[in-house]
Amino acid sequence: MLLLACWPLWLSVAYANPFYAPPPPQEDAPVFSGDAELGFTHLSGNTNSQTLIGKTRLTWLTGKFTYSLRGEVRTVSKDDETSAEQYLIAGRERYELDGPHYLFGFARWEKDRFAGYDQQLSAIGGYGRQILENETHTLSLEAGPGYRHDRLRDYDDERLMVTYTALDYRWEFSDYADIEQEMSLEYTSQNITSRSLTALTARLNSKLSLRLSHEIKHNSQPPDDTNERTDSTTSASLLYRW
Image 1 (cartoon, rainbow, N blue to C red):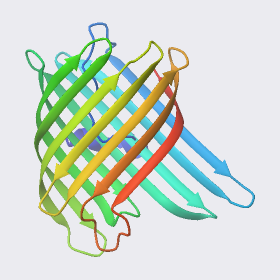
Image 2: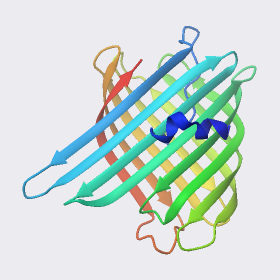
Image 3: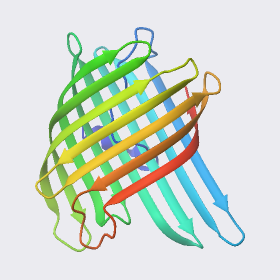
Image 4: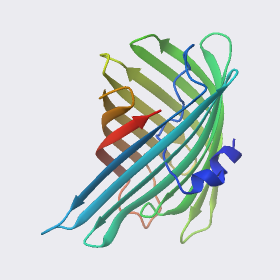
């Protein structure tokens, strides 16, 4: 699982949502699929600013295993000064058990220039259950133990045991649109990290969609040199699937 997060191909690409489980594969699902999301704004004149959000995911099936690689990059600059710079890479595997049960494991590397960490590396595994799975609704819950290595800029590194819980919900309320809600909590002896993604996706055709999303990341006890405990991002982007 750690190797999945470290493949050289993904050192120059980025995407990951708070919750890394791809939905359970359908009977007619392709062996290999992927998507890419891009949002960009540029303002000039009295205010000069640029915002870039890029995301991508690759998914492939092998028997009862579902593998995915995801990554994300986002930068914000104003008047030639960077105010946000985040990178995240993750790899995940899911193994289907009998019934609505599955096992999972993932590794994640993330770097946030303004969060007080030089970088963070996490490895988590555990048990999941598919609560709902039909044409309209899918809901899965999962939990498990893990390990996280925090590299701090001005202090000693921290090696922490993690207790992880998460949910992933999707509601396809029409043939052309769906709402997605992902949430996760990571408990350690130092802090609690919560993540949330709410996204509305409207399909333009079989390949291209418009997406509105709102992401929140909250750290209950960030490093001392960090000003805020909560980061939030609201974005509009184009999503291409293949």
